[in-house]
Image 1 (tube, rainbow, N blue to C red):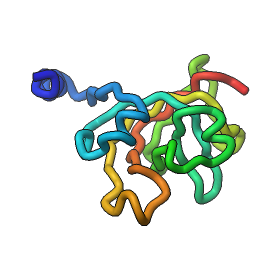
Image 2: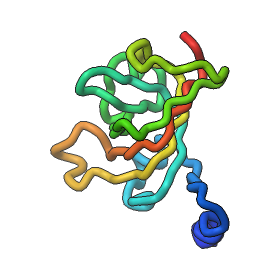
Image 3: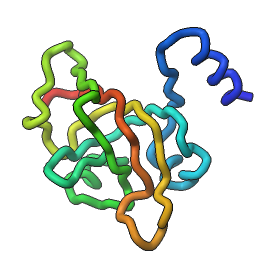
Length: 131
């Protein structure tokens, strides 16, 4: 019923409605969220060949891949800070608190081949703290 209401709400405006979930829910039951617009909070790592959001800051800093979801960003990804200041993605530190909105895709080969439980095609990233 909630998903039906969520779909109806999205038809009323051009703005995408993101279903709030936790990283734990995405890891525990990834198929339930396949191709859904989701919003998730966590801790980011944004480095060359390693873009992911993790459940804890410690998991992010130690690259505990099983506790994370891979992030797929491109030139259309919107980066925002809480204060409204411009975000320099080159200065993002591992373990920084963020909120991510995008479309979730579970890992097809889980559990054996890929490091992460799935990926998010990111529309928006909000930096929640300034380190």
